[in-house]
Length: 329
Image 1: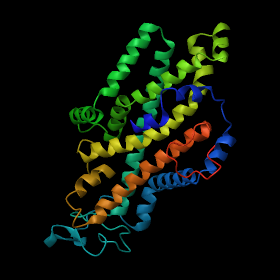
Image 2: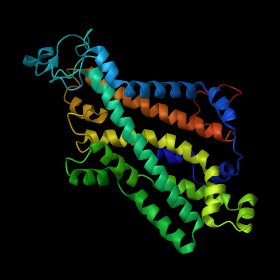
Image 3: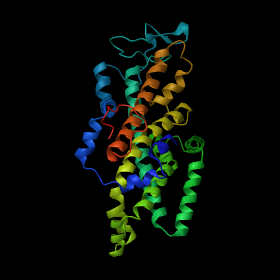
Image 4: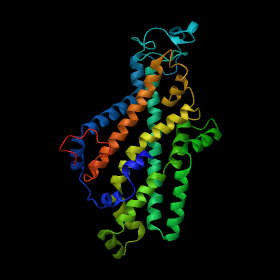
């Protein structure tokens, strides 16, 4: 919902749709003028590199993601790690997991791989389905538009987490959970993209170059592919950057509730679920996954807002962060 508010689907769609496409160099220059966008991109790039290099970094530390270290936890205190800050040491850079002694650094890295994979996969599915439905609703006849618009309204009103919990709970346990989460989130969370695409296409249809293409004999599919899709790139890419953060939260929520990623595979949401019983005895076990989740979602939100402003410089940043005076445009 917050992502849709930032993009807007009302009168702002007309200005965005009518804006001429900016070259890649212009967009890059506008992004570089926003320190917040550069910082967000750097954080996300570092996070992706760490996730991709998780096996290498875990091997460099000399630890494994699922190896138990019973000697590193105090059984007399219920499994609290020995030492300060959750058992931080030269062998365990971020400490160990309470109760099991598994290396926390390795589990956070592998958890990032799953969280980012699910969020990116679900976002691609969101965009593909939402763009297709939005185009069909805007270019179809009155009956098609009415049916698809009402169907989109129904999808928006559905409680995403409740439906996702039901679907993930009835699927056989041997089905790959990351793939299941991608399918469930992607198939249930496309309605925002559809509304944005429909609003922009309805505006684009009134422009001269689209009307000229239709008068020149181009069919609806050709007009959509050659005239409309390029103009939709800016709002769709911007919205995609925003909903990645939302999808990360959904995946973490499902894993937190026990219907997402299953042990022993790590996930930030799963770690937070088990950490709720340790927040007094071992605060580091709560702060690390929750801090990574917060920073990741914030970085995607800031970068998405910066992309929207860079692709359409007439739109001022709604977040009002990281914009130098005199460089807001």
